[in-house]
Length: 117
Image (tube, rainbow, N blue to C red):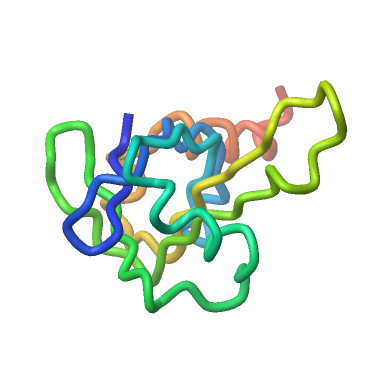
C-alpha cells in the first residue's frame, strides 16, 4: 500500500489500484489512518485545491513519489443510509519511467486495449 501524508503526518493508505498511464495518474480507494480526522472536513468540502494540505505519497518502500499533486476526494457525507462511504486518493502527473515501474499492471491494461486481444 502507498502511504498518504499531509505535511509529515500519515493520514492514510491506498493501493492506487486504478490509473491512466498516458496522464501519469494513479488512484484508488483511500483507507484512513487515525490522523485523517484532522483534515477530513477539508477533503469533503474542497475538491478543487487541496494544496494547503501539502499532500504527498510514498511507495511501500518509503520513497517519496514525485508528482504534480495529490488529492483526497471524500464523498462520505453523500452516502445514503446503508451505503459504504467512498473516499478516493488520486496522484497526478507521476513522471515516466517511474510510473511504469510503480504501476506495471496499469500500463499492461492500457496497452492491452490496443493489442487486439
